[in-house]
Amino acid sequence: MFETIALYPNPTRRVTFEVLANAAQILKKSGARLLADERYQLLLQDVEGITFVSEREFFSADLVIAFGGDGTLLSASHEASEKGTPILGVNCGHVGFLTSVSSADLDRLSDLQSGAFCIQERMMLSVLHRGKEYYALNEACVVSKNNCTLSAYDVSVDDIYIGHYHADGLIVATSTGSTAYSLSAGGAAVDPRLDCLCITPICPHSLLRARPIIVPPTSCVKISHRADETDEVVLCVDGRQEIELATDAIEISKSEKVTRVLVPKEHHFCNVLYSKFFERN
Image (cartoon, rainbow, N blue to C red; front, top):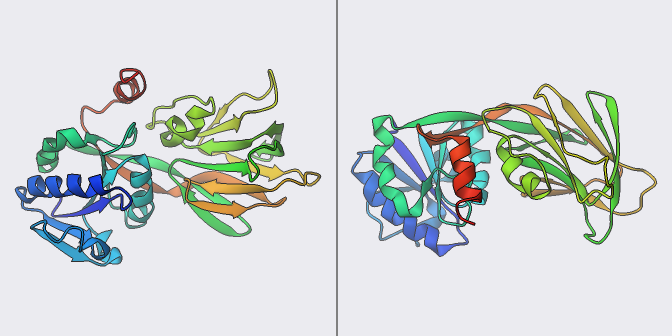
């Protein structure tokens, strides 16, 4: 099924290279060709059976396996989605909500070729700002550049004004991203099989009005920073880009792109929610 498998570590954590090396020993038995980015050749030179290739060839594999946490999978997903390459996460961190295999259970990788896993297509966001388009698997958020200052935002959905928010910021998340920053800000945990946009205010200065809102995937959410405000706000996309907004409006909607995530067939959102957020407490 997967003739070529690309191994993607978190380059800032040495433990991910160690887990990757152990995983390579298991994957070699499946007969797959294993690829690694040529930038990590020195760190992985003692691992047998790995071919070092350019970044362009790397993401053309049949499968990308990301070793790290949710941030590592997010980072790899942007390139993988361009090629339509499925991605599997191996958790070497803490929560690892997006990951499907733990570093303590690497033997699961021997089941990759047996049909024990399936591909889920996860919705992504299209974020438009000043004619430029950005993509997000988890969320796009608008936040105050000065963490000590509340900002004022006007929000509309499908050109229907829904009100203004005085808050530290606003998050628009996919269902996949609903269990990340949005959840921390008081948003709902949404099953990733459900396509939607989750609008969550961050620390809103309101007792009753400012509650999270979930809208259909056909919606277009527009957020603008009020012109009479002098504080600086920035747009963050999946925690990667940081773009200064001034009083520019941004438009957020469902992207035509998807991220294809490989998960075990027995994978169920409720089981993952319990094991990641309740069982570990």
